[in-house]
Length: 399
Length: 108
View 1 (cartoon, rainbow over the protein chains, first blue to last red):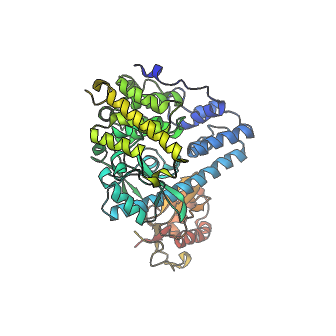
View 2: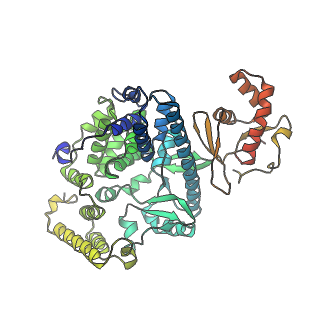
View 3: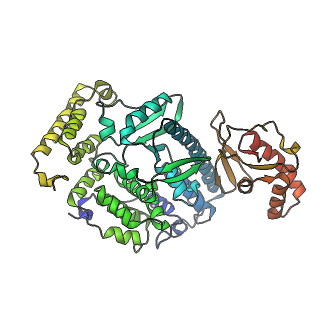
């Protein structure tokens, strides 16, 4: 199976989005990316176009790159537009610092209870991979905890005033199967905590070898406090997961993260590929790098691009990736496709049973009524049935 | 690491001994955007970051290591090619503000 033909074709791209892509690539180098923002907008944009561009930059959390391109005069603007970009950047930085302060408190809470942590995504990448953290804003706090410490972490965070959005479908389900959980503090509506057990929803989240995420770490200092992040290669693969398995259409920021880490020259590519194989995520790595290179117009002869393009992911991975990229993608669909990669029959049964017949307090915020709940139950049981009927060699664990 | 302004929180920068050295408080979070400095000191009750414009980014750079008011003024005067005495007068209330917010502290 070929990755290019197996995945959906991208629709036509509007002009503002194209310019936003150039800004997302600002300062990276490469034939198309190098100072490309200026070549697209040598004259200031009209106010309407500018507002669209600023809106995209804010939504994509790359207002730092926009402000940088404006300050360098790589993107022509009026004085008012330049002032607007600067103000938007300062406002974004205020938000980043508030989230960073919350992150420090959260690490203290976990550490105080003897629980391990790894800072993920924005805060880690901004400090460890960008030349200036002001270039990379982030919208929430992302923390990874050990699967075996999941219940303790949730308990400790609840005692610290954080509340979960949804109840657990069945006891023990989350520490075995979930990607993570969003928590909020009702007394402080601002910051959102994305507590992770693994790196993605669905089948690719379940094939990550969690023990490898805890084997090593990279330390960063925030406000005089040491916090632990994933090592560079694991951080890079997480950016690939985020770019390809996260939002549809893919956000520009994780694509920039991929490019930023790739072109910094400190990644051990053998280790990246070894992890991707071990996590059965070569298709994710290949698609993420191709997407980043194509979207940001990067140098196709760069070592990362050439090495990764030589990969041949197994067809089962490409099929699994198709479920994430499909226009019909749904939360339930991804949960169901995850059944295929659960190894032990007892776990498979637990997973299907928890999704088909969750506890009432899990159900009520998610489904409108009994009919909706039963539709999901029927789909889940059918999926479980199909998997039992499947020939063993067609499942990821069949070999 | 401090919980905000240290034991010298009642210290007035302009009245501090001339040899008194100032340094960033270890718990202060910071970012710069061009000349603008965004700070979030540790331990503040409200979570509103401090936004300092002008040549604050450069000032923050200089406060990475302990430095006196006079030395700061001299450094900035050399960069902006103006009289150090004039800068020192302007600088004292800025340091005062940073100190009372808990963003900087007296170096031991």
